Amino acid sequence: MYDDFNVSEFTQQLQNNCLKIQVKKIKKNEIITNYINDKNQICILKKGIADLIRYDKNGNKTILETFKQNDIFGEIFFPIRINNELFTIAKENCEILYFTYDDISVKCTQNCKFHESLNNNLLKLFLYKIRKQNLRVELLTKRTIREKLESYFSFLETNNAKKSFTIPFSYTDLADYLSIDRSAMMRELKSLQQEGLISRDGNNITLKY
Amino acid sequence: MYDDFNVSEFTQQLQNNCLKIQVKKIKKNEIITNYINDKNQICILKKGIADLIRYDKNGNKTILETFKQNDIFGEIFFPIRINNELFTIAKENCEILYFTYDDISVKCTQNCKFHESLNNNLLKLFLYKIRKQNLRVELLTKRTIREKLESYFSFLETNNAKKSFTIPFSYTDLADYLSIDRSAMMRELKSLQQEGLISRDGNNITLKY
DNA sequence: AAAATTCTGTTGCAATTGCAACAAAAAAAT
DNA sequence: ATTTTTTTGTTGCAATTGCAACAGAATTTT
Image (cartoon, rainbow over the protein chains, first blue to last red):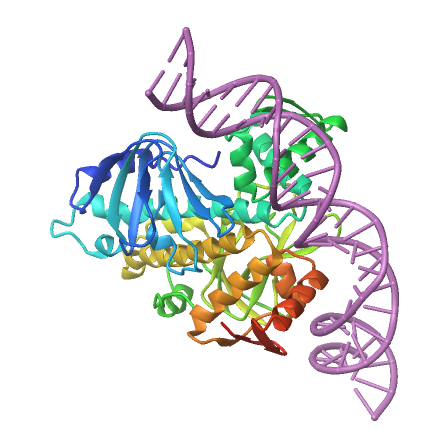
């Protein structure tokens, strides 16, 4: 999807090192963190898939972010609350590294090589996250359902370097991700098909333009 | 608004150092960068205010991001294009530092103190940016104009620690920032007033709840 | 100081979107 | 293998939102 930052090695190193790291295994459909406790917490997803979710007062679910291997998340990235309850939920069995931002600035006594590369690697993870969020803002600021779909498909097209690709969501989740009504989205997908702009087979989409 | 990262000192240092830094002054309403050239470019706003803008094919303007002193932006944060033309425009006279991501990873020969703190400070700037973008996503995923306004006002309330605050936008720009139609937004503001939820005097809003 | 431009406030109407509801299909759990 | 739950697909109707258009206020430029 994005550039490969070669951070896998880094996240492997994290575990057995001088930094205070907690490792936890979370089962599918369980909550990883609810963004209330754990001030300045940083999490790295070592294995699995997870979503950052919000439910509003009307029961609308929104997928604020999606996380896969090596993605970074946690309370530290949400210091400002606008009366929302957020939580990260495991979509598959997950393995997560927990530590705090405060810890990373404390130099370890041994001046180890690990600490040398820590900031550098975190910088890459942060950069990756910013890019992902920028894409998200671009999608969300599109004014119509059609434009959101087209933009998202355009992204998947670029990402897969193919006119055909698989949506990495159920259609229910895709609507929650684009922050639109599912039935209205289905209606729009139908229009796109009828106008011959796309074809569709399950979660596989082919762009006809 | 956010935590103070004490990065001002850092951005001052940047200019007279081993890193290849370009400094430019850009006049109000001129384009700072158009996100096409300048691969891996990073910009830091040393002085002034700027917006990242997109116009869609229907002429709708969207303010994707707003930048003030010490904010970081540039092409590097947008590696994936989804057929949008983006550009950053100076809202006031600006002073900008330009460098590239590639340069920062090159250790300088003198092993200077500056390079020691470079990654650390960039990490803070990146973190700050992620927080800002997360807030943005929270706003944009709200389903109705009313909810967007309420959320944004709630943020300003928290930020100013007061029920009264000044919107840092014209109403035209606020609509472009929330990605909604201006007239529909004005209508909603009127409703909020009529229901006694807010009062309004120019760009000053007071929450009545 | 006058002219030009941008911003605010408003409204009727049209288009889009959301809501509710349901049946069939598919997937997951027992 | 059967039951339960979730997802998909669909549609009429209502509510919201966007569009167009304009006048007056405010701001900026000349």
